[in-house]
Image (tube, rainbow, N blue to C red; front, side, top):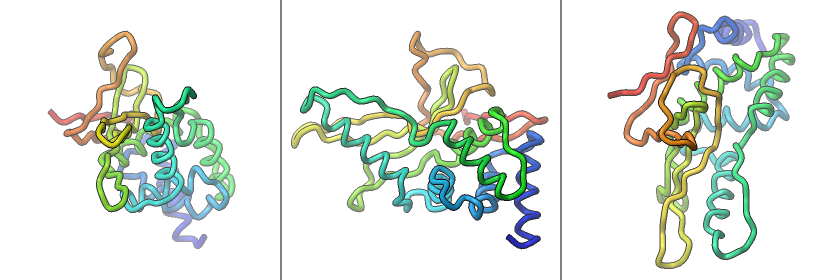
Length: 212
């Protein structure tokens, strides 16, 4: 890493640790830290997904298609399955902090990593999921009282004549930013299909703006 590249990484890193970070800073930070992510799958794959969006063909897309197959197998087998995030919060935090150590920077706290993941979720909303050159779904920003979620909605084919949609989480962060009323006792998330949510920063705190 040359001096200029290091100064750019330090700029975005300082914004993150000083709580002045928002979704627009994510690109610069990922570009800088990506060069220190060799062997860190979570960081490499998430950075590639942000940069390539619907053209991405890596592990995240593979995870989405594998989950799609699990839904399509429902009713055909007796086996149950559990849906987990493509990368856990712990895995993302450990990967980030390992890369930061490689760059001679201090690691991030849980709160700072949560800000990072929240911005990541916002950036990845509206990404199209295609299969065989056909759009079969999309990623959406979802919000519950307790969580911020990158939600996938995909077309599922259970037999030749029956098609439906499956909705499942891809990434999650804790919602410590906006007080929103629970939809029901299960805290079912609000799914923003037609609205593009923006994550900004106001006086050191992330602000989630939902268009009217």
